[in-house]
Amino acid sequence: MSSTPKIRPAAAGRAVLLVLAAVAVLLIGTTESALAATGGAGTPASGPSSGSGAGAPSGEASAGNISLIAARTWPHKSFYFGFRYPKLVFELASDQPTNDIRIDVLDREGEVVKTFYRDDVAPEARYRIRWDGTDNDGRPAHNGRYSFRIGPQAPAPAAPRYARRATGSSTIRLGFKIFGFAFPVLGRHEIAGGAGRFGAARSGHTHQGQDIMANCGQTIVAARGGRVRYSKFQSAAGNYVVIDGKSSRWDFMYAHLIEPSPLKPGDLVRTGQPIGIVGRTGDASACHLHFEIWGPPGWYEGGSPFDPYPFLVKWDRYS
Ligand SMILES: [Zn+2]
Image 1: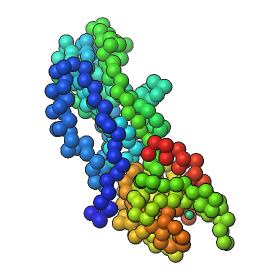
Image 2: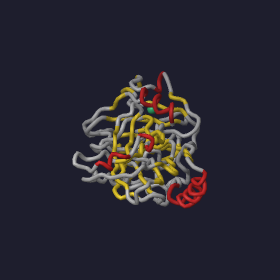
Image 3: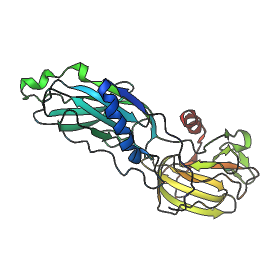
């Protein structure tokens, strides 16, 4: 992986900083510098291996009157199976030395998609949560805006009455976005029409992908991370890469790369990770990325290609 192109993934969105008390400025200041080392863009193949454990609700949930001293969530935008999972750092104030709390990930409708339980949370101590983008059933969450919500665990039926003392004012939301796919070309590009469209007539066959016009030398990133299946040269496709998209059942094919991708079959790539450079190798009259998506069981394994255009348009809006 050391020969991977030395190009950073797309810059992450601005971190959201939420300061609820003057004292928090100091706390956050040290938090940021202390976390910079682990919160950075990272290098390809060193992405997160997992999110935080969900934990389990406490049998006798108990929390004092809790309030948030400081909280921060970042990055503002991330991708499913990407380099950086959405993270939350928080500190509570409470009149109890230990507090059983829950951290919910809510979608924009306010539905809980994922819950983390943390027992015996101490006041004025820093806690971290990292969400891997999957819901409580382990499936990738839908594209869109989400938020972390911090509050006391719901009291268990047999819980003592003091467990109910926590109030709604102890709950706060911290927003961020997560997307399932990245647009595969960084920088200026044009999703081609006419002969560049999926299904366009070619001599002896039809066009099985969608062309994305861009300058030779621009970076190609994985629309969805996953396992590399092929990294080869072929007379028509030129240098190409096929990636089995994590949790998507789709294969993604990228063709006409300027030089062979440093990736090898079996390599794991992250969504948004650079996988090659736009070129015109093979049967290509201009610099562009030829991009295919195949349904299960996969690329030339019995699956069939389908039109990537509507997806590309969607991904282009937020990437
Ligand atoms: Zn093409």
